[in-house]
Every structure is written in structure tokens, then in C-alpha cells.
Image (tube, one colour):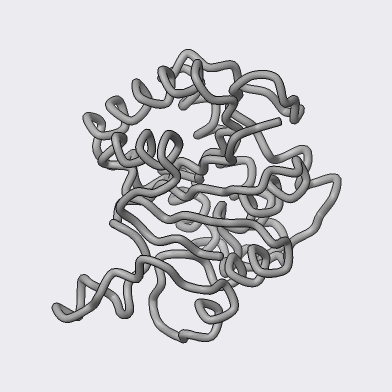
Length: 214
């Protein structure tokens, strides 16, 4: 059984230094805890968005292209961490999971840009019977408002999934994610992947700086 599904947000690839530090930590943590690592879309999904707008592609096609982008970022993470990439959910050791085939075959999510790798990670956690999903992003957690626009925005340390779904503000997670977490009964965390020690603290102590969604 996996300790957690850990989604590595694509935004963390903007800094080579930060991503390499995170990958080094994931490599060491993966030897201590069985982790199911799920890639975000990274720069590859950015290219999909660009071509989606340029060619006015359908959301169906963009959905599958974005999932392929997750596979590409996953292969990159596997190279940087030294952790095996796999399309099969195992349970005995840490892997970088390439989600395209599973999501293509199950097709469990709406085909919309409202769906990101956040929701994909939640579905994979449910599919693999993992009780915790951790989203590594480039922000400290979920805020009461967009911290980049509102100086008085407060970090929410704990928030119920269904309350989060109804906040109606920028929450750093995709709009579908809180609904999935609530329906699946999964505990979720949003933490800053630029500080890998926070992930280590969460795995070892059950708490860290970030937002717990339950």
C-alpha cells in the first residue's frame, strides 16, 4: 500500500534549481516511503494550451493532449529522480506513474480545462486505494484570496473539501478537485514544493506548513 499519492506540480519546473532539489528529496523519501508520484503537465502542457488556442482545438482533443503532456513530464521526473516510471499501479515501491493510459481507458473526468493534474491525482488516489493525496505547488497552500493580488489573503491551515468547493475564489487547486476529495473521502494537502523539507515533515509527522483539505 502506498503512503501517499504525491503530485509534482508543473509550475515547479520553472526553476531548474528548485526542481532538482525537489527531485533529490523525492529520490531519498521514495526509499523510506512507498510513494505514487503523479506528474503535472509542466512546460509540455503549456505547449498544449498554446496550440489549443492557436488552432481552436476541441476540448476533447486538448484533454488527451494534456494527459500526454503529463506522461512527458513524468518521464522527465523519472530521469531526474532515478525512480522508475510505470503505467501500472503497483504498491510495493515508489514509482513515477504515467497516467495517460489509465485515464484514457477509464475516462472518469470531464474534458475541460477546469480539470488539471490535481483532479487526475485525486482519481488515481481513489483508484489505488490511497487515503492521502499531496499536491506540491509553487505556493504555500490554499489562501482565502489570491495572495498575488490581495495582501491581506490568509493561508487556510484546514478547510473542508465541500467548503473549499463553494469558496468561489482562487484556491490554487482546480475547481473539480475538492468535489473529488470530498466524494472519495480522501485527505489532501497543498504544500510548497520549493521547500522539500515540508513534504518530509508531513510524511514523518503528519503535519507541515500548508493546507489540509478533509
